[in-house]
Amino acid sequence: MFTAIFRGLWLTLKHSWKSRETVQYPEQKESMPIGYRGLHKLLRWEDGLERCVGCKLCSAACPVDCIYVESEENESSSPVSKGERYASVYEINELRCIFCGYCEEACPVGAIVLSNEYEFCADDRSKFLYEKEDFLVKRNEDYPELKNRYPEEKLLTYL
Image (tube, rainbow, N blue to C red):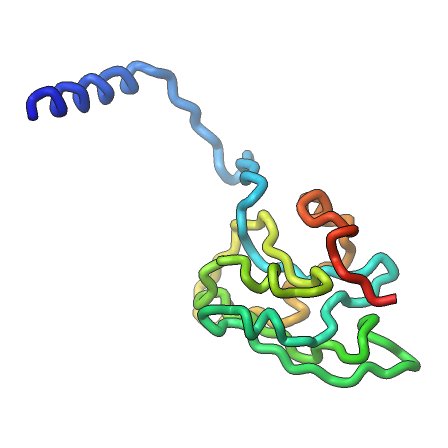
């Protein structure tokens, strides 16, 4: 028993003399590890169409039921996505989400991904109900870490 106490004290003393690294948070941001799962993002194809085809597999795979998807038929004159349908309503309740990554595993076209973004806070609970426009990326080039993490050849494509 005493040996365990002395080993613990020795470990504490050994680390107390080492120099510490302080990060000045608002100015300097730490880079997250490769497998970090942060805020959700909905990706687009290279031509600007949405990847999401409204299949609702992400909603079915979610263990806490925080994803709500409504799909509509895609018009051939002005398509929203490359599939027959598209997600007209896509909502995620980030307060319920446990960031497990099942939604991105279930998506056949790689539309929903978990980004490295960890800074999302609000002063009201209703602001954590993200709608499609809140996490639909404008351009995929704005998130290079997602392109490195999800190679295109591993995703199904609709042509």
